[in-house]
Image 1 (cartoon, chains in turn cyan, orange):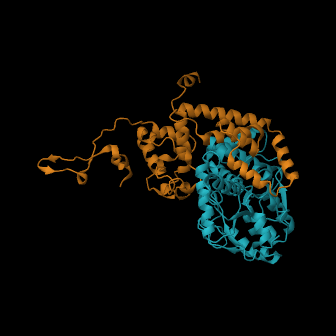
Image 2 (cartoon, one colour):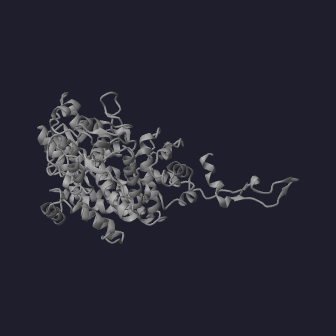
Image 3 (cartoon, one colour):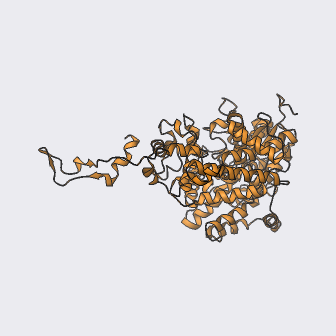
Length: 313
Length: 250
């Protein structure tokens, strides 16, 4: 049995990339691993993981999504002995947090998790065994703003960045008990961890009022016009704030912004300027990592062009 | 205006008279608009119970109509007819016919969770939207929405292999909804991706499409999940009074 130590070591954590980071979010996975290597942080992949259930399985049956997430948490804690799992994808992060909350507070969910775990032949996840953190928490807790600042080799000077957090990182509040706890903690209304990290990396952070607005990712294909409308709103607002770049922290938001930027152009003749980069790609550049190793050439928007033009590559 | 009067002021419920005098008072014209009198007889008294029986709808009875959900709603800002507060009100009163006027837009909820985040009564309006969308489809009031098709395509791949592969989900969704895969904007996007992406990576991605990513030793979990889904489907249909014969057989 593992015991949760009062002083956790976030320098070596279980790593849960999730399905999107093996597909469209490949560059996020690549840049996260490159940043970990450059900083001497260890990511131990969760063995034989499965999908967290995403929004789609939740829509079919929420308790089934809870079970799927709990299997990942059971492997990381019971089989691998970790007390922290880091998920860079907002969807995975949200779902693991939601599973922790639902198993602890809803007897029906706990029952379904126990039943399915038994039938599937693995240990049932025990509440409190594992702390789920986002890639932003991971950088904040291992380095902090000062730590980032001291390791910057190529500051992102003059790069104007709008930080986009999306929906799943902060809502709904009850699944994030550690947020809104005053100075130092993350805010659900005005999240700032990405702002802090990229400011420490030398970027000029613009005040972006839509940082937690929705990109319509749920209906990116099933109601594409609605998604395009929401994304155009986000892109135009970033432009109006003077941003060159929208920094992202979620593969679904990131690919949604890229896809619908192109769709708005193709279908409606609406062109928008901002390029999309994962925050790990921006942080990696500042740490002196090359753009290829960060997968910037895989981005659909004109990220590589922008980075070259600004002499950051 | 209280929300329960919303339906009364629709154009079809309003009348004005060019020339009308009642008890010696002139009530002609726009300033004397009348609301048609009406009697409601079509309550579905089981409506709230039915929505509560579906996943996500459990706490709909807790609503006290503060309107925070609609105020925060992403979709409402684009389409004012998308009104979670009003639909929750109608569910609680059993006003099924009034609810059915909006049956084709309920599925458009984007699950941004702004409503659930601000709800002071823990109603989980986002869940209620999903329960209501399921209710409409199960009762046969609407065809399966594109969102349901997407969810089921995605979920079936998770159940099958433990993981999804995105291009397979996209292909499956377009097939289910009878749309061509060669969408102009998808082609434009692929062209842009090809600007910098090296051939090696493209090959690796193509290979992933062929060799489906999957969780090892998934068989037992797959069986358990399928049993659970089938059981839940039976329970949901029974709660809505569908499949009465199956009920007797239990």
